[in-house]
Image (cartoon, rainbow, N blue to C red; front, top):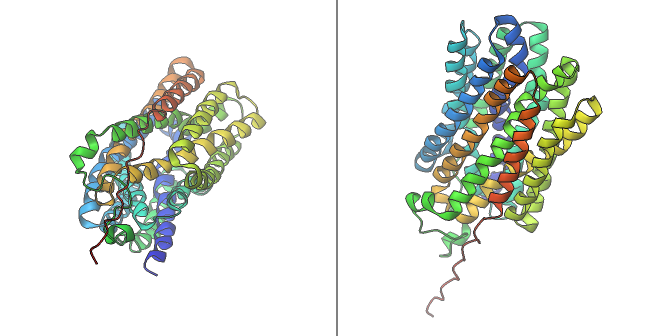
Length: 402
């Protein structure tokens, strides 16, 4: 009965991921209306998202360490309160610098309290179907483009960008605070209680883990993966608009990408449980690279939808599997810190896309070079994933004297 509560944790994590990550990523919908209303450049506004990824990554490492020490509830509750506060203050910003600092730092720190700590916590609640459980939590983030982004687009069309951002802040408080109160630590692993570790590396310290080949390969693969998809994700709406599509149509493409990511998370989670997470990650990264490169040739609405499905399924599917791989290599007692460190490095990759994409558009009046670079980063991720070390051996149970 205690372990069945893990599915409650999965539900709470999915909701929190949807709201927190959805609120942060909704800046993609605000990009053009904010630029038109304020005169701020797309590069400047996009830079707030770059700061988000940087601060989210750094904060994820700190929040992960706090999760290992104090438990996940206080961490995600703090993040929920801080997220609403950051969005509300950003809606009142009077200068680009003020907006960049508030949205880029406060919202990023808050989002870091949700993603890595919740993913790490869920890996400890499941010994079987771990890939599916983690993928379902991550699926909440896949729902975000179908929920928060269209909601933000409707609010902007009905009111203005400041009112829309304030409404999203209030929504975040209403939904996230109750969900955070449902979160708690996972129970001890059955195998560990029986004197046998569930995975290898049980005697590892944090320092040993962060210097290990398996962590280095995991983190670098995570970095290139995020560098490959962050730019295409963030600039999908703006790219569709430059191709002559309407604003609502552009948002529906973004939503289709998210819907495909939702399906990809569940599909890849099931495949990872059956065939091994590392093998499925390599496959998904190859599909992601092809999808990112495919946007270079996309102009018509049907082409956008086709590429969005392929690309969304791939990047959505591989993201939760990094936590499954981390749990196979490292013990639960340091998972928050280890996965938080991997997320911190991956956030550097996420930070590249929004700012570089904005600079490419402002410099070349188009996004072509963004998709070429994203394809290259995707291939680099595949190459790194092929270098994953073998899984550590598991100890056999020691026979007890009669």
